[in-house]
Structures are given as structure tokens and as C-alpha cells.
Amino acid sequence: MLSQITLWTERAGMLFDLVLLVRILALKLRRTYTFITLYALMGIFYDALALLMGIDSPEFRGIGILSKLIYAIVFPLASWDLFEEAKLTVDKVRKMAMSRMLTSLLLISLWGLLIAAFTGTDEGPQSQYLMRVSLIVWTGAIAASIAFLWVMRKGIKLNHWELPWNTVVWYRFFGLILLAEAASCALGLTLQFIHTSSPALAEQIAEIGDVVIDGFGILITAWCVYKLRAVPSDAKVENAPA
Image 1 (tube, rainbow, N blue to C red):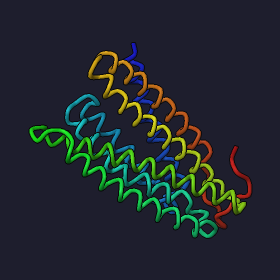
Image 2: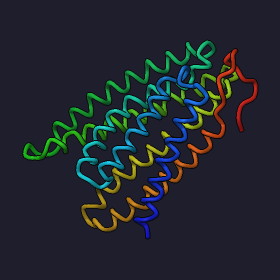
Image 3: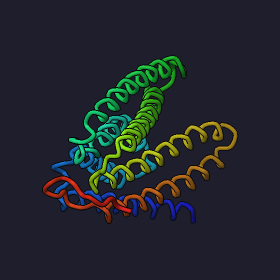
Image 4: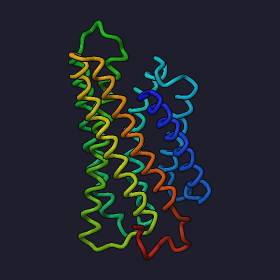
């Protein structure tokens, strides 16, 4: 029963990823939000590979490891991109926050390479090394992106800036998506410890966690699709979405 729920939740997530991309293209938001469009395309590409290879296949697990490294780049870029309609207002604060985020990402990546190199055994497969690197870099990118959005929030509140409609929508969307990714990462790290003593329990918790996180992502994406608007000619909307 749980496996069927997981399967249908994953399929619903794929459908809403496609709806989000269609919405972006229909509203011609790709002209303003290049990296957010890339994020949506990445989601569709990843979903297509899941359908072709099978989610539980060894080949798709390898793709999953590489996808974390790719998303470690895409998430910071999308976080920067979501303020494009408000760039004339927030550009100074955004550049300052981004410089800090890039420094953090560089340090985290170097730290991840060192940890991955000095953990495990020399006889272990190369995939284990890549898994350790991708997990550390992916986690660092999520944390750095959340910190970036937090710094931007403080700057916006301090200066009493009024943001365009889509900027508020994207800010809330990616803020919640990043928190969901952080929860997924924390769950994955916790399950590694549980798996050593009780593999069956770890697998059951993982399935339940996937359903909850995927369901949360579906709700966020549906809300985002509904709230998005075409970019106005003056790139400014007076009222923020509820």
C-alpha cells in the first residue's frame, strides 16, 4: 500500500513539474527568469530519466548522485534569479549576499572534497566517493541558498522595499522548496545511522519521508503555478500575493 502511494505521489510530482514549466513558458517568464526556467527544465529532465530507467534502478541511482552536484549549482543561481524583477531596487544587497554565498560554497566544496577523500576505504567503489562529495556539496548549497534568502529578507525589511508580485511568489516558493530539501538531507543522514541496525525500518521511514516531502512539494508547486503572473511592462506590481 505504501509503495503504491509513493509511486502515485512521484507521478503527481512529475506532472506538476511539467505544469510549472508550461506556466513559465506560457507567461513568457523565461525572458526574465533564465535560471528558474533552467531549474524547471532540470526537474522535467530528471523526471524523464526516472520514467525511462526506473526509480529503483542502479543506473538512476548514479544519476541521482550527479544530480545533487548539478542542483548544488542550480539552487544558488535560481535564488539569485528570483529577484530579477526587483534588481534595480535590491541589486546592491543582492550582490553583497551573493558574494558571501559564493565564498561559503567554495569553502564547503573544498571541505567536502577533503572529508570525502579521508573517509571510507581505498577499496571502496568510486561511486561511494562521489556520493560523499555530492551529499556534502548539495547540503552546503542548500544551506548557503537559505542563508542568501535570509540576508535578502533582512535587507528588504530594513529598507522597506516593495517587491513585485512574482518576486514574492518565487521567494516563498524557493524558500519552502529549500527547506524541504534540507529536511530531505537531514532525513537521509539520519537513515544512514538507522540502516546499520535496522535496514527494514530505515526503508519504511524513507518511503514515508519521501511521500511527505513529495506531497509538500506538490502543494508548493501548485500554489506557485496558480499565483504566477506575466511580467508587467514596468516590471512592478503594487500588491503582494497572499
